[in-house]
Image (cartoon, rainbow, N blue to C red):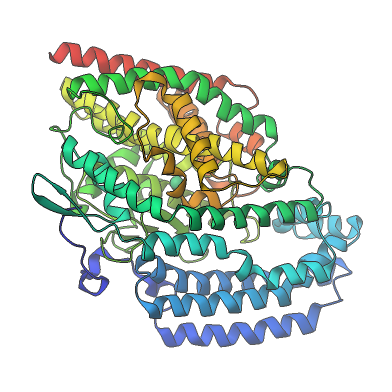
Length: 602
Ligand SMILES: [Zn+2]
């Protein structure tokens, strides 16, 4: 990323953009699929509504339902990917809205399917699982649903209301991507353009302290102007979640949100509590070292993402990234490597930086096609981390899709960040191995702390710790305003960073920056996934091939097992705090090694 104004999407060269023609070759093909789906949904309803009473019919219906789901996934992504790459193009938004509304209508028409299955006799469902074992996992989930399913008419109404119920998230995204005008800021007479993405992807890491702090100040000032609208939007989201939780019979919103993850509260709370307490001193030690090495007067919240050694920051082009990616993942074997490297020639990745593009990165696996990755390539080595992270999701997405029905291919959210962060650890390891130079070793270790763990164990975990306090309010029947959210966020930041970081004005508005808050209890899962990834990675280092085989097996599981059992397949026991303790110990050792390397170099 540079300080130049961003180009518009139409100026971006083809090879920097993803190729959505793998989903539908042309818009005409897409339109035909829409028409086909309209008819197919109606036929499905006509054929099966009120008929799902015997195993034979149910099995036939599930087969057709799978196909309907696959087409809907394709239609959705064909509309969603363009809008995430350029929200400023009204044609993209129009298409996305159209498909969103159609999808809601189809879901409402098809809602009888889940409802009738859930109402079915347990014996009939067992017969289905026995006769069609490929659906056993799906049937298991249907049985679980029995406890929380509402009357069919209510389920149908909820499905119809879906676009309205998901409005808070899209309103948040509109405020952040379209409405907020960050203008420019001035340092020593020079003007710098600012945007949300420019701040988060570029200025936050800027080596020049004056520029970095001025950017933060301007960024915070603009955020502040929108805080009341944002707080109200967020409150609407939480009211909705609490209402649905209550309707479905949950006393606590936590139990409702964790129910879908198959995780109990103990696992969830332990993740937050242990990291807040035991990782904090390790990170305070690290950040103080960063401050000293950079000769800063103080470490403020605007400075926490800077590099220890910014002069040693190799640039990497997309082309050059191929080699780094391939080397890093080669430890997982030829098959896995070949699979993931398809990302380049098949253009799974949108590397472009353009106006209207969503900030951050994501991977969307389009079942039956291939995964798509969105990111903004800035020619820095940290981009390779982002790319490998997303390709970790991609590898898991493909392996799970190939080995599971579309109805049960999805991993629990608790596990979702394990494959991605595992690949980041591989990259660090590969960079370390590549050089005997202490500066390079320190660089790789620092990258691991400042990228992999900072992001997953700190940024997102601190979101989770804050989010837990907000949900407690909601559970207690209390509301909140922007000032309350800022107060909660500030308290969490101060608790974690202690005296090592000055939580300067504007830091408390960090609650306005994350879309995760609109996705239930998502933020904490980054650290949960990385805990599993770290344990599995340490196993691969120690045990080699057998641990690699376990990991590859883990990647194929999809939604087959609950998190505790799935982690066991990767050789990790998450029923105790041992994986967390080991991970924090590993980080502590790494920080000590970094400090020792600094001494050696000086
Ligand atoms: Zn991820």
